[in-house]
Image 1 (cartoon, rainbow, N blue to C red):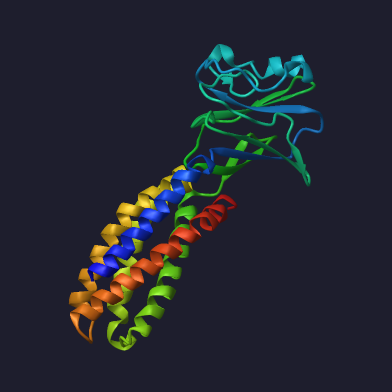
Image 2 (cartoon, one colour; image 1 turned 90 degrees about the vertical axis):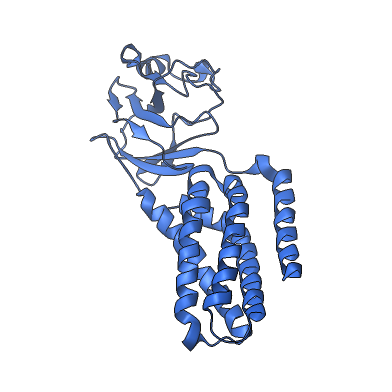
Length: 283
């Protein structure tokens, strides 16, 4: 048992060493806005924030129409300032005022560490029309929302769907992998399926409430580091549950099964982290 425990922690250390090399390569905050029924004339779209900031904007004002940039400032008297075009952030922010054609719609993307948690969307057209959304709050690291121009209505995929997708991916993969290992250790499914199912259901709920939340809100790097202590707790729990509740063979064999199953599913979860994040972001 000590041998398997040592192998488990060596693998975790190797994972952490890999992360330290590539920590700066983790996903950054990003907001993608799809404008439906966009204006039939040139327009600019920006985010409004409630701080005056002071970060130098990355765009060159000479490349844009001055009157439209000025219209993006039309709510400054009410305490709302243009985040990207006005440089009203405390950290770098990149964005796209003009947007990209996406069928009959247009898509605008804003991102990096200066992306605000709370914001409003503002559209200023060439003819001088201005539309502003209600206050929006970012609940995930990378999100996609839809802004209907005529109605100013903002819609997005509910956050609970992201958590459901994350749980389903990790739970089903864990059941498949650990179920196969259970069979390889020759434990009878008929006698152990309920304990096996409930054990993994409980541990995956814990994993979603910790690592899953970290993944969706802060990205893969944060999730990797959260995963280490949580997997240690799950390992200890599954070993104890297997020793005392599984049927058949010796306690040592049950413990070895739990160690092998947990180590294998942990490595699989580590490898699947990035693909799962990309799947969630695409929703």
